Length: 428
Image 1 (cartoon, rainbow, N blue to C red):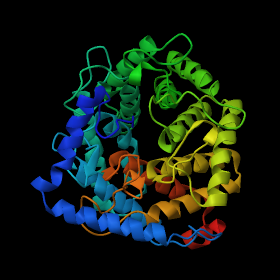
Image 2 (cartoon, one colour):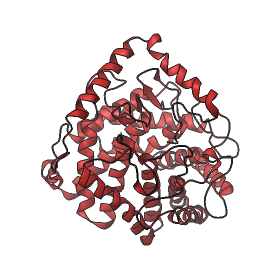
Image 3 (spheres, rainbow, N blue to C red):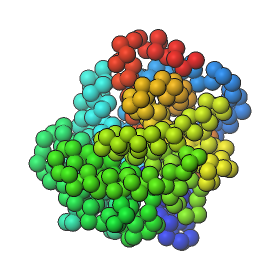
């Protein structure tokens, strides 16, 4: 998910004022939202005041992992619009946004993963149906040259490298599940367009890149290209993926910091740091680049130590992990859990698994399990909800990465062949 400030545009003060004005007027159109907002603000204020900061924080389970994943899935299903796309967010001020192609794309693998692991057959069928509707809708949005456009739909008409990469991830998974030639060729057209727009140094910049700049978190575009190479047997996609991986790795510093996030005018949100790590790790694993995995592990370890010692990861940083902002970016937390769990799978180092279990317990404690369908199972942009990243919103990419983290935890626990309660002892 690319940062869009208060709305989904950064084209000057006038463009930013429009969505802000629309959101602020939301409670006047739906007064009940003012009550929900007041309750959430009070809840987070109380929770923050009494938060535990000791050795055993995040070790006691409040809700089962399975029940929490089910709640996340129900929230995602409720956010699916009539056109088949998934809304970007539910705002406590203005309600649901319109469909967001980027997030709809990379939610498709999550929906299929859920369907494979879910014990509730009715929910499993709903997840598959949602994935199919999402895929069919995305196919209607592809431009003749293979790209997908930026922003919400309907919205800007200019192509986006990042959105195309995230939708490509969904198309690849949809093809593997449905074996549909239309999806297969759509995926290859997207991959071909990404290769054509790639810079000689392996980065993406220019008119199809966010703010025109090269970004280290576009490793999340290299990852689906590596997947596409595996799916099609075409080495040109892998070559493009590795070119970008090499450029991203050049942004990794000795102290673990990642330069090149390049969000002008904003701190580096944990969400984007985790994007860079996650995309680089998955691309490196697919391309069997052990040295690259080691570099990712070094940066991931810095954040692991921060979490273990402070029981908290800051929502945003300046360079070199300085000036951490005192709010939590829950999406970034979920992504870091995914990174640590995958590093555990790749290295067998239980310290990654241990940290991820604690992170997952923290995430579960921040998810409301009952109440209105717009809120129950939703993941807020920030904790507390008024934090700087996507304030006063429940965001679909937050639900996606939280579900991914919990599904990965479940998969690993099953590989241990241990009861969930026994496996959780590792987190103490």
